[in-house]
Figure 1 (cartoon, rainbow, N blue to C red):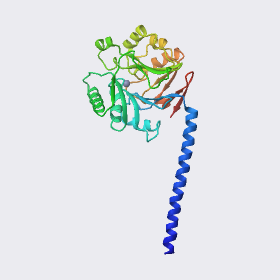
Figure 2 (cartoon, rainbow, N blue to C red; figure 1 turned 60 degrees about the vertical axis):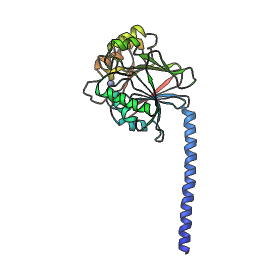
Figure 3 (cartoon, rainbow, N blue to C red; figure 1 turned 90 degrees about the vertical axis):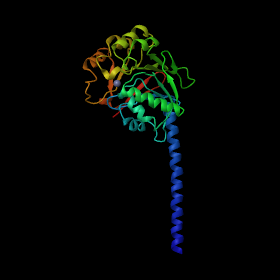
Figure 4 (tube, rainbow, N blue to C red; figure 1 turned 120 degrees about the horizontal axis):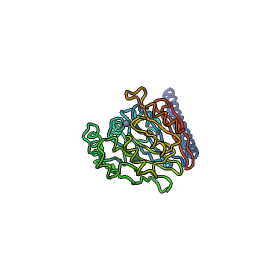
Length: 303
Ligand SMILES: [Zn+2]
């Protein structure tokens, strides 16, 4: 009887300890999160994820919104997102599919069943390639489940708060371009995100032809502090005229180690060097995280 009582007491004590430690843990977590909020609040961040040969960028607004531009070529997006956001947070406020090529779209298709996606922005590609069809079906399925779908139009603005200094802009493709150009790279969405004086241009996989059009017709909006380098640093993109007009301080290349395309091309690296632009690349630097206030930005690499 005594033995039972004693055992019962210890069981009670263990439960008591678990509760106390649980409360202490929760308090510590709350204090830590609050301090983190105080230290990192009001910052805008962009994580250029090392997903191998492909693009995937997670943007976090100062208010905690999460925007994903492309999802990379496979399921590596899951572990990459887990390294940037808490495991219980499975909501992406906005997914932007720049175009339907596998190295940008497959990760998005994989993500849909596992995450709550509130909004999707894409170009409503009418392409018939395998991935374009798969992406379209996946987006239609999300729409049936209540996700809001937006078709990109140039000059549209993306806003996530009432802060007039924080917004995204759709720069390409123009309405005319949709009739003139046909390939998925040519019709890739070009976006610019601005937070105060810091801006970032995302060029997906646009080729030279589109760069020349942007230099000619959109020169007033393409200058940016940070450039997500076009088409993984291919020499069929990244013309001198374009680099000169964008005039970035930092260029970020999302590219796979020893990829079979030879990306990034040495000529492109030389062009950036000649313009005095610092280049960071996911195959060398791992995940590249840019954190910015409205007046300055810092770059951190997480290899
Ligand atoms: Zn690509």
